Length: 340
Image 1 (spheres, helix red, strand yellow):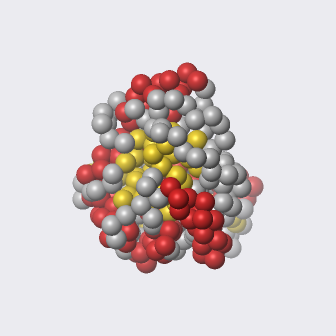
Image 2 (cartoon, helix red, strand yellow):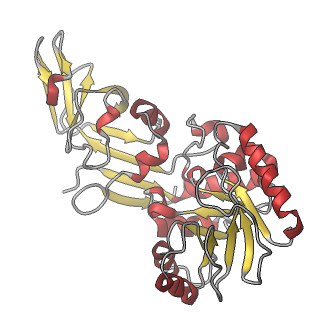
């Protein structure tokens, strides 16, 4: 029996894609579905994104691309990460994947995008060679579009100077943050990941940019008890009651992806926001209640006004990481796909 349920709303994802396409004002949108669609399910979200107007899919690895190719036979699939072994490149060639080349010899018979290093400090060519026929695109990776637009614009200028003579090729630099807030970054294509899932690239309320969270996560109270003054809950006695206090135990923990550092975050219990108290365990955590509630009362961990961005601030991380860390499957959360 599942202890929690993940719901993925493909209707919300399509609306996010359309919102981004309006912001892009004619530039193409490529949907980034790496890491199993940021934990949402790559195959399902890829289909929804394509149906809403995305013109290509982006993944991190060749195996990810091959898995999608089994479902999407003719759509463009771009592998953003390193090309891998010769054997993997051969598989990519046979499957018609497009590869990003950042520091290696350009393979023959594969459509490739050359990646120019402009300030991210990771993969990328220091100088752009004259592109051979296999090259269909030129790209760079913005480091600070979500937090320092000035440096992002510096990167964009470096990219423009290096690629102006090759403007007949597809040029792409924008991520979700740049697609939304830096118009000059949009170029021919924007590679949008986090925003299509209704997550804010700026760590703010997604509604600020007309985005809708796609994933919700719900469980229920498994036990309700009253602590007396001096009694505690959880490892390390991090929460000790100073007065008679009702607590509820939720059968979800860091083994499910509800992180250990989410103590202090708020979840919605029976429609009301309540704080997580004590230490989050592998398989459970406690919430402080304002009254006795029945076992089985719904608990919303994410969605319906409980924002991944708020959880991320408590945990000192980013919304992407929280969503990618949720475990689904027969032994953990049930996953349901809806079209709202």
